Amino acid sequence: MGGRKSVAGGGPATLKSQAICVSSMPSLIDTFTAAGQGHVFAHLDRLPETARQRLLSEAAEIDLAEIDRLVKSLVNASSPATVDLRDLTPAPYVSRPEHGGDRSAWEKARAVGEQALRAGRVAAFTVAGGQGTRLGYDGPKGTFAVTPITRKSLFQVFAEKIRSAGRRYGRPIHWFIMTSHQNHEATESFFKENHSFGLDAGHVHFFRQGRMPAVDFNGRILLAEQDAIAMSPDGHGGSLRALERSGALDLMKSEGVDVISYFQVDNPLVRCIDPAFVGWHLLSNSEMSSKMVPKAYAGEKVGHFCMQRGRLVVVEYSDLPVAMQQEVDPGTQRLRYLAGSIAIHMLDREFVRRMASGTDTALPFHRADKKIPCVDAAGNPVRPAKPNGVKFEMFVFDALPFARNPVVIETRREDDFSPVKNAEGIDSPKTCRDDQLRQFARWFKAAGIALPVDASGLPTFALEISPLFADDEGSFAAAWARLAPKPELREGLCLA
Ligand code: UTP
Image (tube, rainbow, N blue to C red; front, side):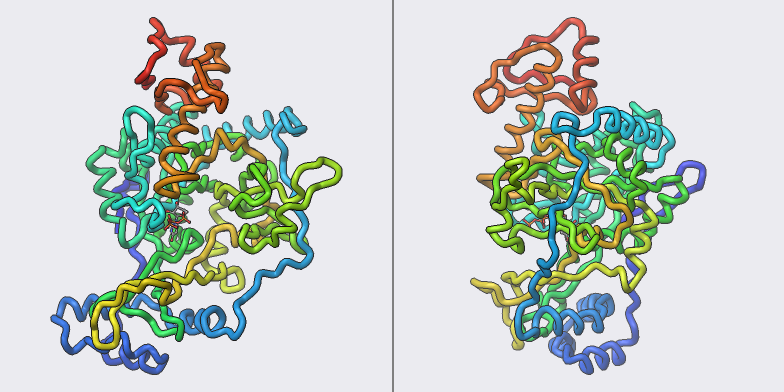
């Protein structure tokens, strides 16, 4: 497990591996057999010693009681679990000043956030353990090139934003990156090869998330190979227990960090470190805070922030009836369920610990039916054409109902959200590149320079602004004013 960091003043600190204890072979096999999962070892006798050990060590990772519970509740249940939609109302949120929010309250929040950043209380946290199947890119998604001219990777964009914030607030910012078993080594190597993109390697911390076995529709654990269980990452919600198990929370504590700025690896527009968001989180005494954008249209495929019996919940678009998605508020004439979730959160460190350790605060698992390559009882490979099994995943937003004082604040989509999810179409490399270009053009415009743009605000030539040059409108105006001589505004302009 990745530990290449040292802690200022406290000597080297290494994040822990998830403990895997290989119990003695007969008792492990007996336990699996008693649980109806003995077929996992069907090919054991034919395997060479190293392969046997690997299979046994994977098996030892599995919590059979948990699998049994999930199979009973999610796989064998006579009718599929339905989402409780009773008593839902739209969740309140803090509006931006241009939508009626209190400007002085936003300014106060920003000042409070800046103070916390200057005190070194905030860490960045990226969940990068996903499989990225929709993008179809071979490699950790964070290594995918996204910027228009210099083709910086997602990880480099975040690194530069975090470096820039560290410089601004006079404190280097710790960055925690959650990987998966599949992409951990490749992620670490990428950072090593690129000298952590100018960050102090001692402030960049990698840890693997947990994984879960996939099962067939009868609840039997699937084998990916004769010597390997079909394991997959346990969802972004697995980040809470992985933060605890890896020792990341302890490291944060020893470094004086109590606010965790959570974002996904696929969104280069995200403000990794947003002082106003930190401030709203702290001023609200919130354990888990969220950013919302007003939905672009009724059927947009985002989660909806709702209240349910006094608790904040996110209801996925697939679970909210179309009629509710389309409901219009008679007062504002806007969608009633307007607040869309963009998976950007602020987490209180000790809230994460509580969520990770408590049984009554455990996140639920969700069922996803997938095509899972596997081997059959005779050990022959099966490449299914349709879903043949179930993966279990946790979602981070399921922690919201457990959080004290969860606050939701509005953000401008064009300043915080343009994910790369699909190879083509919406949320693709092309839409993300265009959104970056539009943002650069808006910054120029705010500084008094009108770049030639089309009706959608897209500049007619490609350019790039490094987060080290500027990371928002205000810092751009200041950096541009200092620049002498001014460069020519033309195709390929790079401000670094
Ligand atoms: P997505 O829901 O987009 O899933 O993840 P994905 O696995 O990356 O992509 P597809 O669905 O296979 O195409 C949203 C964010 O959550 C992280 C991803 O890395 C991404 O930042 N994630 C997802 C994890 O860290 N672990 C997981 O188990 C799942």
